[in-house]
Image 1 (cartoon, rainbow, N blue to C red):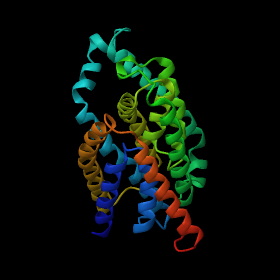
Image 2 (cartoon, helix red, strand yellow):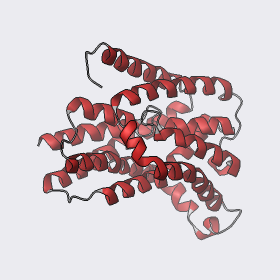
Image 3 (cartoon, rainbow, N blue to C red):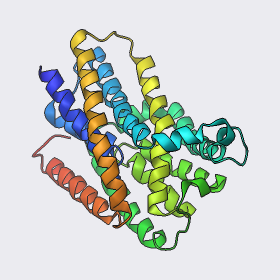
Length: 279
């Protein structure tokens, strides 16, 4: 029951943070650390690493549900197999934006896990990412003109893809990284966020599949139940959060998320260097 309770907590955190520019991976690492959701044996650590990635698919499923009509329309033959069709352009751009982080992730996955998958690097990333968000939003937010993902160019997609590589540093945030890449490429915040949602589909499916392939020890019954519970909870929470986030972006700047990141990162580092907590 304790494992399932922890799975519920992690699922809630994932559902809230996956599409907000605050880093779901960073929050999952921090919360896991504080609630003791960390394995002792190699098999337990492998399960938890897999769990933290796979439950993100629950949040991705929320995107599929919320954008179902647009996704279905994009894969209709007249749109998908027509070089000028909306679907062809959309998925070509998603592929282009997906490739850079996929290559870097495959090449440096082990080094990233060994060096950065810990609370202290996450705290640094939260602050660094927040500063970048403030600088780039101030510079680009009011001058960008591409407001529809249908109008994104290959060059803009590549800009987003390059910036998505920053999200390989846990705590930077995949959402924040892709939105910043969108700003530099000329996208409005709402368009950059929507493209980020679509880009999350192949990115997180690939990451989850990679983690499942790495899992050498079969899950026991309790672990399987915990995974399903975490998945469902993250899906339900993300359904609510994404819709509210989209409405927020249409009216407000993202500075509030940057301030939150700086506060959380700074508090963690102060407590760590004061030796109040161990990170």
